[in-house]
Length: 543
Image 1 (cartoon, helix red, strand yellow):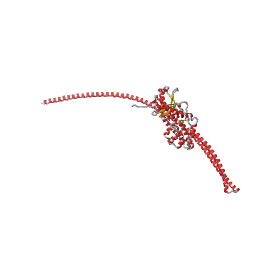
Image 2 (cartoon, rainbow, N blue to C red):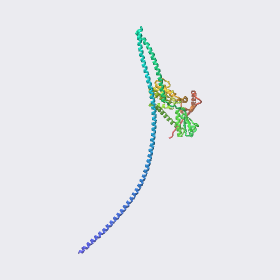
Image 3 (spheres, rainbow, N blue to C red):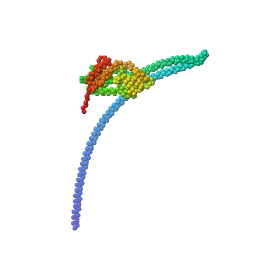
């Protein structure tokens, strides 16, 4: 019975042991598989880590190479920047040294001018001191004369008393009768002495006044000495080569004809190498022609349309220069306010001559002389300078307006509201009207001084210009005439007419009428050729 229980128990125990062993083996195999997987994972992780380490090393190596390249470039850029900075520093140092040298030179010039001004002031101070000494001496002499006169009066009174007493003693005349006789006699003696004193005083004052006036004139002339520039009637333009002459002449001479018609000057092309000559009596036209020719030569394109364009530009430039010349004259003389139109008219005097003397330079010189003399005499120096500058203002437009330059100048001064003193100085500087102020007298003296200097004027050139001006005036006096130019030293007059008013047949009649008037009114050597030009243009622009 007991064996029946033991056998199943043994079987159960054996079964448990077998199950335990089988479970152990199964778990062992599972553990081994997990360990193998872990080893494989660790191997893969190590391989990945190794690969990443290799990649990192490669990247580090590339970074080192890049850093070396960047470092080299930085060094190169650094050296370039240093060289550039050194060059800029050198250039700036040279610029600073040049500016410093220029400033030193300017300071030297300023010092020289200041020293010259100091010397001038010292000289003027010495002259003033001398004049003060002369005035003091004159005052002392007058005081002494007054003392002598007073003494003579006292002696006369004493003599009168003595004679009274004597007459009372020896005469039977009444007191009033004796008194009258004595007074009459004494009055005659005193009148004679007073007349002698007055004559002596007047003679001394006249002599001193003459010396003083001469001294004022000498000081004014010395302080306002100006150079005289001889004006000519030709201008020379240089050419880069001889080929340019042919281009200036143009096909069948059309360029030269167009240039002469637009400018009113004579273009002379001769055998003189590399130059052309512009001839004309009007300096404004000649200056316009010279600038236009220089522009054409520089540009190289020479044809009638281009010539017309360049002449217009040159004319505008000359007009600007005229205004600048007027402003420059005002600045030179210290005049700060004047009507702009009057300034423009004043600038035209730069291209006006009178007996070969530049009128603007002459007017500036007269202004300086008048101002200097006015300052010496204690008059209004600024007003005197203004009157001297404007005394010949009428000559700027006397070719365009009928009347003398004095009448035209007076009208201009009144039109632009100049003072009555200035107007009278202009009107009286040739003695046409009475002088109403001392400033007008000074303007006449200054004008005479400036005109009478040796070499200041040339009579022949003035007569030549007057003849050419008269020639142009005759031509422009006819209806329908637009412009007239005297060329070839007055041997030819070219007349531009308005095509809408003058027909082709009428041009022949006009040329004959002008010829007849020239023969009737003018005296001239040789012959004068009259050329009437009629040109009509039609321009259309297609768009």
